[in-house]
Image (cartoon, rainbow, N blue to C red):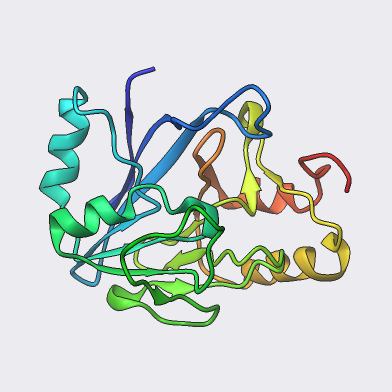
Length: 210
């Protein structure tokens, strides 16, 4: 699969490609998405994974965008934050804690739920207890998720946690109070709408019971 470029709306696009660490035992599909955002005049890259050097169209688009800031939404989405920070001289934001063996060299400013980021991005609480901070983009009327939701086979679903009813579902339902139309997820079909998000709140959860 070549790197796929997808324009979502003005100031928001993504690139999608196979993750190099995927294997047959993974509980997620091999293709993952990275996001490019321009909001309030600030250019962001979110959970960026570097395309192969041969993917010239993708690199030309990324280089034209550049980045003043980079966000990592979840501890296991470190990906290539160090590379992009070095190339673009960007400020970096992300979790306060990381998995052993997958810690970026770049010092990251911690993102916490409720925090406002440069350009007007707003960090959210997803109720999953996985140290993920989804982002709300008011300018694009969009929600960006790492793993709180996924879309295997194109259907948007919530990733299972043991405390879904008590914590996760109330937190995600609260997001319906936001003015959004676009919902982007890293794994599976990347782009969905508000109606799909509302439907996902009622669907069977994704993943095996713990």
